[in-house]
Length: 502
Image (cartoon, rainbow, N blue to C red; front, top):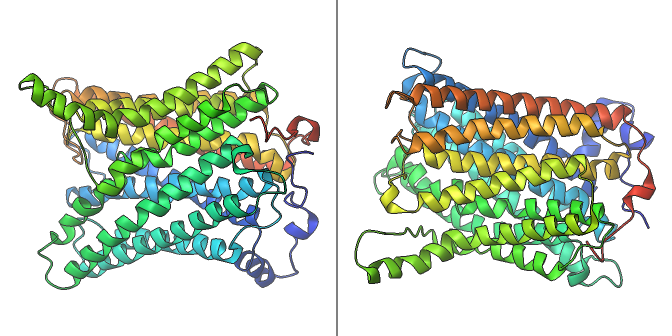
């Protein structure tokens, strides 16, 4: 059996669905095809990725010099909010869910997607919700916005986004739990399926918490505008969903992608499958900090008993999820060493994507040490960039690996590897300088970078990194489009299913 679903390969009837524009649009609006819904979410999320990185470039240029006048200083809060909201809810979350929609049913041998119309409805809720969010920002809305009606519109749009992602997550989780082929137990499911299940359930448990906070903020903003801080208070109430540990839950899929690719590279003989499941489970403990909205820090000053009291919750909420990444990464490297596997193009993207996520999680550990005084500095922004862009890298690696199973054509190896290394360089340059600048007390959410002799250097390097990453994303999307249309025909033999072992 091969992992290619021949029904999902684009055929003539797929590309010419009707003789007019109306029939083509209706075929997409009314579709119940999991690969179509998944492709829609991935395609739009890539557009949001480009928009978010462009905002990152603009903010970086503003920080280089105070004489730069690209944006109105009064819109600084909104632009930083666009970057965070766009990266999490416009790019990372829908991209991971979209890939799961397209691939998971094929991996578990299901011909249908559970609640297929619901999944399509959720995808369109998310799509139009993000349009509303974007329009609200343009109309001077969003956190810190000056137009109350546009702020209300932002809250409405974000609510639709959350609802859409919840419906899609429920569809993925239900499909995995109830629609596996005869004879496949849950424990036998491919490791990518497991990571998708954990991600979906994590979102189902955490996003309603954010929805509740939005309801409180919406009611307050529509009436008194005092209890929850009006427009400026929105970030305070939903900010936990745009930072660690919530963003770690969206990175769980990176472990599944890497382990799946390695399993294929070593011909399905990946050791210690149970260890991989443990690693994914340990990383999902970030859920505890999210649903409680608690951030436990380590206090080193004081007597030994006070330090000990803060150490246990600090490790539980911050270090334990990082241990899960280390477990999976170590097992994957061990499997490659034992089998002497040659890294593939998709492996390069997935491996460095996990590496960037791990670097961000390590930064989060340092961020939560009170004595370092890194909170409210650009160090926080660097953590988000490392994790968010790391997930994007891994997701593009998943597209390079799973893509031929959908459109039947391979992506060229060397261009993918070359672009992947460019993307890694962009992430490092975009985030590492802010790790350094955080120790010089450069504030987060501010375009003022004149806080030291080297602040201009760090801001310039970070801006260059954002620009490099922008070039990488645009070039990779172009390569995907070209490969899907005119790439080398995929050899079905190389896609032999390794579901029971990988």
